[in-house]
Image 1 (cartoon, rainbow, N blue to C red):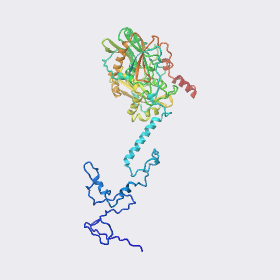
Image 2 (image 1 turned 180 degrees about the vertical axis):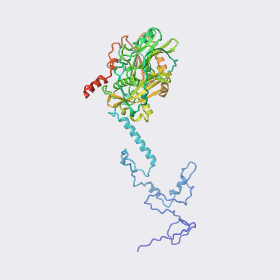
Image 3 (image 1 turned 30 degrees about the vertical axis):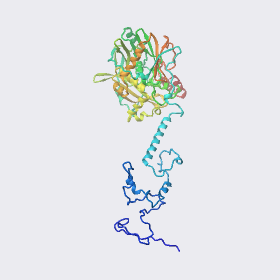
Image 4 (image 1 turned 60 degrees about the horizontal axis):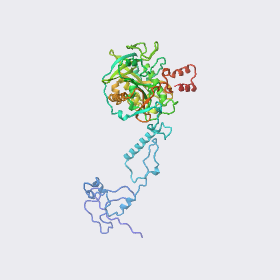
Length: 572
């Protein structure tokens, strides 16, 4: 016969929940143990501890160094209770049965880790901490994709490790005299007084202000000016500079392009070279025929490498030629071509009679370097605008977009809403080019510098372009915006001049090292570079006739196939 289970007397509390205030003495027949805490739960269900509100709240708080939540947790602490001696052992071996992670969004990114390799947590972690970790993983994966998206080879070295060729081939008979690291240039400073204008030559057409209202939605096709001649004459071939040198007007002679190259040398990555001629007590800074100084670098300071194949339309050389044509055509398209010009004292010194020349004015300006030394430079401005009966001179330059995947910014989408972001990207990728344009505008004392945003009609079409926007800046304000210090610029020029004035009479060449941030000075023979055939870049007479002319002739003849395009590429 099975014995019954005697529950015992359960006191009734008419005033509320729980046992009554008065202690009820159990009957003599009760088998219940005394002083058992009120914890009616099954040990097989891990629902958490039941609060013992009869426990002293100050128990286990400890001193000032004790746990912060000791008083709050003490009512849930049963470790010191002898009623359940095996509680601690059971809890130490307890594990949740259901350890699955929270459900993923249906359209979210794929899980990055193998679920079987993740440790099963005994309890649910803080959701915010887990969410932050997942966001950090997503951000890292996004950066990795952006870093690798343009790389055909994952093991390709970064841009810093890329090997560039020297702009001029160093001959074994050349004698290296000195090498100057760029770190010394950054510490230089020199102030020059305001320059004086000696001679003004050429003529300027007026700027068309309607181009300031161009937007990507109201773009304009970039025209081609094949009949206008552009001149890239070096210092010693300039008849005006020869005349000023014979009149002993200065000691040092250069052009604004050469001076800007020296002033912004610390921002350059590609190799360049400048020929220095010491004749008597005079110093002439020249460029070689077909020098890289005639072209415009593209993506020079970018971290993303350009294709190395020379025949690729996105290679550094092809983009430089393309940018030079774009810059020339843009500088003539934004003008009123109605024949109304501002003529100066002398005509264009390089144009033949009856020849159509581009709108340009040459300012021959003189700066005082010290009591016994003056510098004369030929500076250029491309246009003029009249505001309140006062004429302001402008410089005109064009930034070009060739493929948005290289810069990461699509001009057609960002120019209207995020123009600052577009300019910041260009300042990062073309820091040297923009600094040189600003330096040339400062040398010419231009009142405004206009920057045009020109893009390809299609990323694979490097002949047809459109103007998406034109923005104007004051040179001094823009120089401060890009952290271009005029005192440091002139400090670099002054140090190079002082160094070259200590040399003996003869011919020298300054070469920017293709792989290191430094400049080297070589002593070269007197006949160096005179009969030097240079395959790249194009000669000036071919630069005046862009390869687009051949494309138009092919279109007129109905021949627009791939063969003709390849021939045009070869001519470019």
